[in-house]
Image (tube, rainbow, N blue to C red; front, side, top):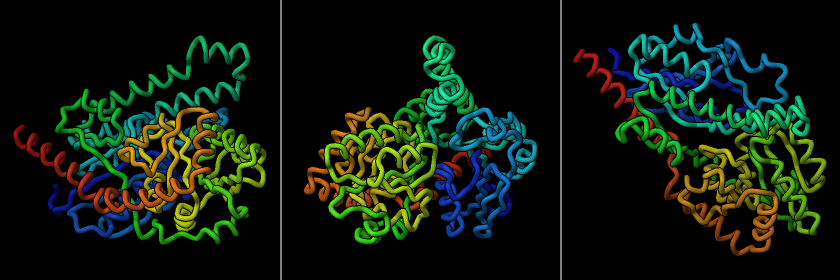
Length: 426
């Protein structure tokens, strides 16, 4: 800790800060807001990759942006990238900005911010901490496969060669996994959420340097008090008596939206009164509209206030994604008293202790159709799941202030203290 008595922490999020950004960005925006109102001896700067203006949240908390050196946005041949990152191996301007900090906190192990932080940590003797937020290796597999399909055609000779024989998606995934392991090897402490990430970290570190990181929630923003079923039915043109599902996030293959579309389409053809509200943007939005017609509403990007009303008013959140490390939408839904149908493969249910407020669904459209059909046919179970979600939120879900103080600041203090002792001993 420096002479000011404040622990100066730089958190590095190698993603653009936009209103449509996902949970990784929003998590750190909310942690910075918590720091701005905290009495902790902490000075927190969260760095994003972009050209937008900086935002000062308080005397000891701010959000800053630096332009990328080489963004994936420059790769015009890519058919679709959900969120752009900086591919440069080193960011000179960021390196200069990081030198005064006491702790460098990376939130990935792959891109320019993380790679720059390693070099600054080594040359300046600043402790490096990492937390897991996105399953980038799995997303790399998904979008490598999609890129091959879009450019060459998955059924073409070359497409089949790259996917089936050369197994390029799996090789790219393994390369990212190797890069993550190398990055963790430079870190002094790591914070994890999933069991598999904890197992990886424990193989690299001793148990004393592996810590649990929760997701926080604002219970004034999200909660059953925001319920407005009649208003939602009116505003989203939902037929009375419909079972209303909510999908939140990027409308793309990475979030497994196609499986949900197929399952919904099957049930609608059987005559079940189903309606899907899609809160998000992405390349599959037209497919939702074309296949589900009047049984779907696509408002696009939805702000927090309206999202809170939707969570509290719909019958369930459909978390069809099979690639998740954490689930901000799951926390928001549970706090709102919204039952959740969640992919077993994602592992999200284990993050919530397999509470009965969640129904776990196997992979594939048939499994999702069966689960949704059962859910629609059991009003008593829906009500029980809603009550359980509210109870779980009350008993188990922490505020952002608690996450900052108990999960993050405690680890940052530990890392800074041990490193200071080592420097004095040297």
